[in-house]
Image 1: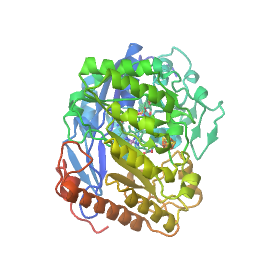
Image 2: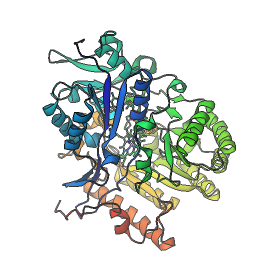
Image 3: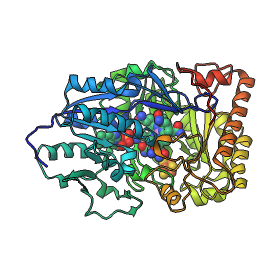
Image 4: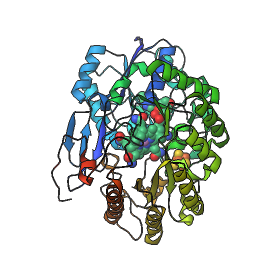
Length: 522
Ligand code: B12
Ligand code: SF4
């Protein structure tokens, strides 16, 4: 493993943005950008160990640069610009984050461009996608390493191994090449669950941080937060209400293990870790004092599952930060929302909620969704949230394998009957590294065109029994359009942004894009 070079300077890269465009030429989602907190955490750990670090977020730095590559708009810095940045900085090693499988094609192109010019610089990939497909990613000649899961500490261990300070086997979760053969440092550890090329490990075996209070705060000074504040759609899930917002994690992982989700893969199997209230309050104070933030967004997998701690946390937040807005950008576990929690949210300026409902059929909830939302309680919860003036966005999913048309229509009925006009009616997408993905392979359910790079999130990537992917897409669009038109009729405003008033569907969908894609036949 040890060669004569010293690996001291690290460049970390977050890839560009990518939005699917419908055949009629309208983008299926809005352009957005969000501070890459995973890289900011890795950066902080590296700095603490005296490495030099640079972080480039291709998305925000090249936000205005768009390219239409049918059927997607890709926005961000170009590969040539990254090649040039590498020439200027001359890092010893390049790390690239791939949270979203749909971006893997763009990342491969970038890696090829970098390897062509700098064959001697090792390239390491991390994040959800490589963790779910390590062998496939390592099979690319232009990729040298994959580090699986949350890599705050293991990235430091990896550099120590490269620098000959200890053996490669000390680095948990590393895939490397040995005379052309792909090897990994977990081969002696028994996984808790094995899938098609992926594994879930117990927290203690995984190399991911166990005591998350001990982690240094994300190194935001390596990114310019100002750039994120200046763009129109700030974070994908919840548009910021304030101007100077920051993202945070008060927990990591999830107590559940839904079969379509990659959280157990990246963050350990049922490895929910909560920070202490003191630690969360201290970080908020630090963000306010250092960056003058006026809004905090908790971007973790499952904020609300830490029920008892959260009630205490919300009380402290209400007392200490009466002038700051708060948001949770991930779906709230509906079962965890009792009246006391909702009262405390309202007092602590948590004025929006993303309610994870998922399916409208209780049987589907029990069989497919580990958190098993109690549908009968939803109307009461929604009514109580409304009475406290908490703005609601709801998340629904349709098209689970085996889900019947009747069950899907129950979800559509639920969307309508709850009367929530701001929602995502998502089509279930199978991600590599999940039991759902393996089921689709085993049963031959994938649609012909299905590959990671072509994921659109508007159309299913596998077949369900009595409904076609096109029909699902059409239901999704019809129900969304119906609600959006109602929103315009009601007040002419969209509930998805605090400041912007929308007067037409077209204006909402094309807002912020410079590119006007042509209509297509398919
Ligand atoms: C916050 C979040 C977002 C944010 C921003 C993410 C960002 N840029 O940081 C927003 C709201 C924008 C977002 C949007 C979407 N998201 Co999202 N999001 C998340 C979420 C809930 C948390 C991510 C996070 O901060 N985790 C905590 C930090 C500490 O972890 P991390 O960022 O992964 O980083 C750690 C490790 O991965 C690793 N690591 C990361 N990078 C690197 C690089 C190297 C070199 C190494 C060695 C290690 C390494 O070390 C880090 C430190 O511990 C995840 C769920 C999850 N569990 O990750 C989903 C998740 C990433 N999102 C997902 C999806 C599908 C989406 C959307 C496509 C949803 C949609 N239908 O529109 C969009 C579109 C994104 C796009 N293409 O632009 C999926 C991706 C699945 C997949 N395989 O593709 C996830 C995994 C949720 C899920 N389980 O389904 N998302
Ligand atoms: S509750 Fe949410 S984050 Fe947790 S495993 Fe299920 S889908 Fe993933």
